[in-house]
Image (cartoon, rainbow, N blue to C red; front, side, top):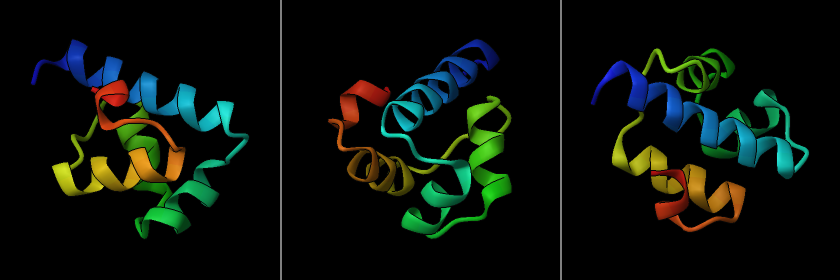
Amino acid sequence: MSKKNLKELGGRIKQHREKRDLTQVELAVIVNVSTGYIGSIEQGLRYPSLRLLEKLARALKVPLKDLL
């Protein structure tokens, strides 16, 4: 995945998180990862596994395709 695509993915995750009025800390607790990891994903620095993407989609109450 390109840097641009990673940034876009992270931006979509952040957008949906903010729509649900969740902090990075709250989302991290729900999906059982560190707050730093959520921040890195949102900044486009880390690519989450498919399993984590599924957890994020469930936590954010959006279809997985909306994150991708």
